[in-house]
Length: 290
Image (cartoon, rainbow, N blue to C red; front, side, top):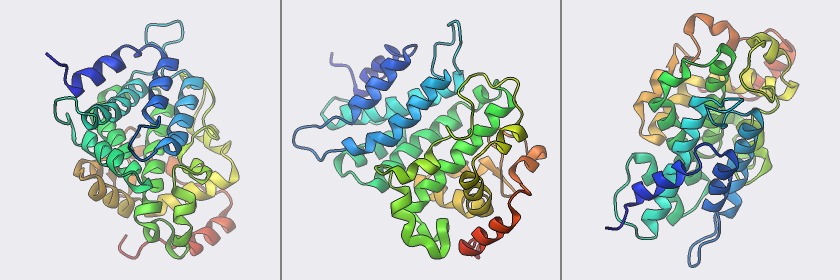
C-alpha cells in the first residue's frame, strides 16, 4: 500500500529529527524548482536565514546530546517543515488529506505562490506549533520564554505589512510591501532575532532587561514605537487571516502572554529614546479602533 502524504512527510522529518543540518537541507529542498510549476526559490531566503540562526544557537540540536537543544524550538520547527512537505506531496499526487489547516495553506501557496500566501502558510504552521506545544514552552528559562512572544509578535507584524499595511504602518503603508516581502532583505528587520539574543542555548546567566538594553537602536524603535502600540488589532487581524481565534488567547489586555507572564508585562515597556519614540509613534499612529 502506498504511504500517504502525511506518513511520508512524517517519516522524512523523523529521519532528521536529531540532525540540524539535515533539517536545513530538507527545508532548502522544499523550495527547489519543480518542472511545470511557478518557481518559489526566492521564498527560501527568510526561512533558511532563521533556521541557520537557530542552528548556531543550538536550539535544534538533539535533546540527548552533549549540548541538548530546545524541545520547544525543535517541535515548532518540525511542524513547520512537516506541514510544507505534506502539502508538496499532496500536490504531486500522493494519497491523503491535509492533517491540519496549515497544510492546506501550503497547498494554496504551492499552486499559486505569492508573498501573502507564503506568510499565511508559514504563520499558520508557526501558530499551530505554538498552540500544540505550549506545555513545552513552560520548560524553558524565562528569557527564552520572553523571546518566544517576541518572535510571534514580529512575524505577525511582518505578515500585516503585506495584508494590512495601514494597520501596520499607518500613513507609511506604501512602504509595507518593500519592508515585509520575505523574498527581500527588508523583512530581516522583523523576522530575525540575531541582533538581540546571544548565540547560545540555554540562556542562563542573562536577564530580560540586560538583553533588551543591548538591542540595537533601530530595533528598539520598531518594537516599542511601532509594533507594541498596535498589538490588539494586529492579533485580531492575524486571527482572522489564519482563521485561528485561539491566537487571541495569546494576548491579554494588549500584552503578549503566550509564554511570558502578565504580571511581568513591564518588560514590554521602555523609557529609552523618548523623543524618537514620540516621533515614530506620530509618524505611524496606531489604528483608531485599537
